[in-house]
Length: 144
Image (spheres, rainbow, N blue to C red):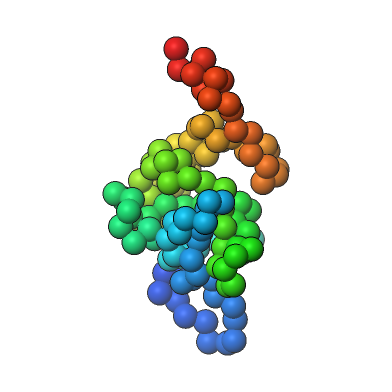
């Protein structure tokens, strides 16, 4: 049985804050999409990722963001911000919600995704939300 799950169409019966439907912006204040779902760990109940629906600008329509990289927007009440550009998101492997239901598929997807998140043009320091962004010269040196 998969260790991760999604809320899907589940609706809370009590007065609980639900982030689904909130917009997600990047640091340049470009709207990246709306939170469509969350991926949580069955054992801990902790949210691992949020699923963002782009509304169509991304060919796969949805992408995920580690929950610890999402923070409240300073410009938009009840919305969120993440330090990603559309170009970086386009480099992520396509998200398929059925992968979450299989430990094997999810393991492969998560490995591929994390390699893009950590090793791509934007790297994050382990255990922080701080970016390590190479300069243009460093990126040019690494490509040849």
